[in-house]
Image (cartoon, rainbow over all chains, first blue to last red; front, side, top):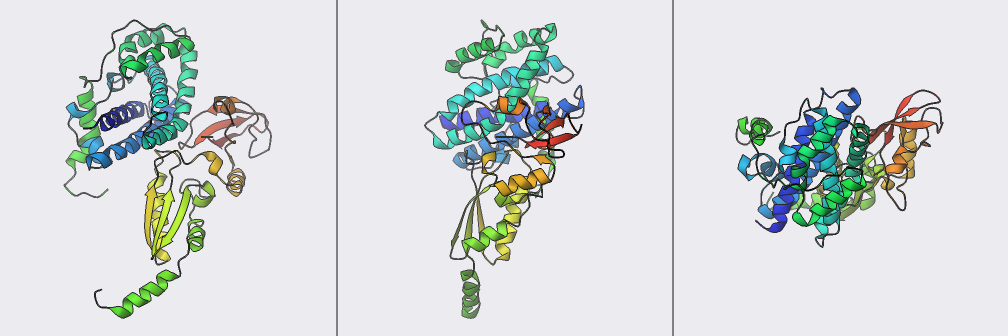
Length: 218
Length: 177
């Protein structure tokens, strides 16, 4: 697998799995507006995953759906930050949302200035939507700024937030969250690996596709 | 079909009638599946039409990437082109070739008439954060600019919800992207 495909799959897996986790709030968010917001954000993230998988699929001679659903759990490259099941933990969900979107902006900036025109173009398109995710995340971080549960969740998730980015981009995350008024640093990053919480998600996410007879048309 | 000279001659004659202009006209009849007051051409998602030997190639760019209407749009374009007697080839671009600035002025007016505040032009410099948060979006019902952001997200990825303090109506605003 080329470095490019590896990168595409890592970003696509992050977006797909976070989309899944965000969609778990559909119908049960603390209030209706957040129900709508998290559902819409989830839809965007899964749309981004699809586009990234399509680029990777060309190189691997497969399809976006096969990459999203036909790999075994150990083959996914998503960061532990997006794998955690945080349902019923709103402060933790907002902490992850804030950390992920802040990290993702740094990653998208790097991709937008890449020499790879295809990747740079796709990153620019994704970023048009991500701006809204960041606005939403930053409004919520501002609202919960002085809440202990939110602060504790930021501290707890910080090592896996660093793991979303390649090593050379991590100092920028420290700087960026500092600019936004949060002092988070000095942790050992948790690198990309499949966590215990991933397997049940994978079971559910792939269940329909695995149960369908071969050649099923959707 | 091998050896059927008459059939192929008729087919060739029919195909010769298809022009890019006719294709554009046909595509302009396709409504957006989720906001049917505006057509795909007014939405600005058709980037190019090329006609060659009975094949019509359409360069198409998604609006919002997770929009479930994309496949419906593709199928509708294929059907329209087939109706013209040509074979459709739709290429979906995954680049940054669409923004809400590509919605035509006719399209904006139709959005407004249907109760959607059209997207504001993208700012020449700086982020769009302030654009979204500022007052000044015109209420599509009463025309007042005393409106405020209620929720960045709405019933589809392309919409935000605003509230008009004058006529006390919530309304939908097409996001600027």
